[in-house]
Length: 58
Image (cartoon, rainbow, N blue to C red; front, top):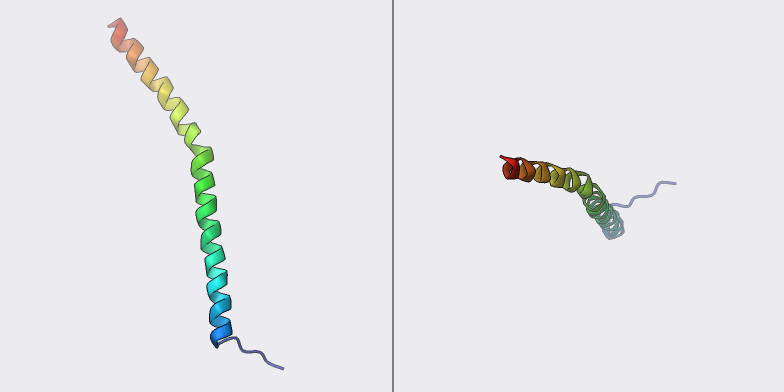
């Protein structure tokens, strides 16, 4: 017994699957940005503080 999902039902299933995939992709990229941003912002403040101290001392 062979099943074919090439009609409207298959298009609907494929569309739902791709929609779920892209929603998950957007979600994980938002979480990565949220959690990885401090790893770049905090050291940048250290660099800015060091540059301000050097400029103040010179």
